[in-house]
Image (cartoon, rainbow, N blue to C red; front, side, top):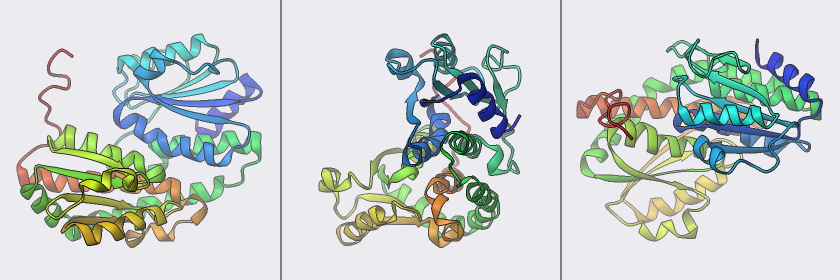
Length: 322
């Protein structure tokens, strides 16, 4: 089944969908964020919410029920919080769609529909969780709201494959050496971004750098930068700005203007300069995060090679009791 089939199944069971909730942990919840943003910015009949699974279990939304769709994702297929959230959603009467990379895993157990995806270097972006969840959201809205952006979204997802392939070596060459050098000079950095891309600002910090490189850092929303965090800005403080090509670009540009004159350690990754400006403006905002994820992978790889730190090495996750 593809995204359209699952959307039809959900609407066939529920008749009308009033809420869609996206629930996962870590990198998986990050992948679902663009779809959440698309629904909230586009649909007049569906309210979207996004939760880390433990919080969904601790205080599930009051509206969760027979007219809800809940999409969960566990890459490993065994994330306890996500499995519990999936089961809770089903018990409340929601249509549940789980996603995983592991067929036959604990989340792919036959209790609910489950989409099993591949995760290889050559897996198209449309066939990964971020792209699939966007397509699923578009199909829900097309059927219920008459949303007509699905074709532009599909074209954009297809474009991403070549855009990313071309951008990776360029970003490695253009930004990699300075990123490595600034990481050598600084024990800490701030990562900034906004809009749907903020999920990858968060992801670059907590997944690529903290988890996979043991690099101390923090994430700041570019829109919130001027409401407190900019007071820490000065020479010698390392800032990395993810400059989007979509509707949030002006927000990032404002932060960039200030940073350029208040710190000497600023790096900017501008998605528009690496191909995203060629994507249809109506969907570019929601596809930018996928681009930034792949560049996060590239830069953590460059750092990992320079620091002799394999991104797959863990000292706590899956190693000790927690």
